[in-house]
Image: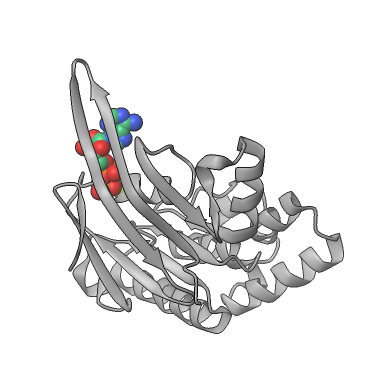
Length: 226
Ligand SMILES: Nc1ncnc2c1ncn2[C@@H]1O[C@H](COP(=O)(O)OP(=O)(O)O)[C@@H](O)[C@H]1O
Ligand SMILES: [Mg+2]
């Protein structure tokens, strides 16, 4: 049997707003298979980021379960969850969330440092990725000295450096101009293919979504085939 890399079943999330309850997601089922890229679309405020946070174990669902590499996140301690996340997930955000005072190389190395990998292996892997993203000559630049597109390429390298099963990407090119967005996306897709990483990518752009194998839409709290 080919088990999904990441899945959720009967997932729901609601927030309390004063006395009223806002149901953001309801009965969401999703199975992400190995090497598959799934795009999640939906209008602003429909719950796309909320779904990614739940899938990544960064937030707790009101109902339902998230299964990462066969493990139910709700059954794990915070520490176990962090470990599982570090080993199997990568994250890319719209505003990169990198560390501005550190170099590109150090930023890319971070997931491997957290994992306690050997320094030489870390350096080798991070330098190799830096070369693949076309920033070899920016090795020691601090993040603050890089352009938006370059930073986003670093963010993608960081998400992939630890060879995760799945990358969760939230509007990864949302704040880039079309030319840089295209460059970053192409890089992301190429790396994803060669590493056979699964991806769940949130985007509000239907043209970007079309490049995924499968498109799902959040509509009134439900996840449906687009
Ligand atoms: N921490 C929170 N508390 C209350 N409401 C929230 C919280 N986070 C998100 N929401 C609400 O949930 C809905 C979905 O938000 P979000 O997942 O960020 O949408 P999207 O990413 O699709 O734009 C929005 O109506 C938002 O206001
Ligand atoms: Mg969002």
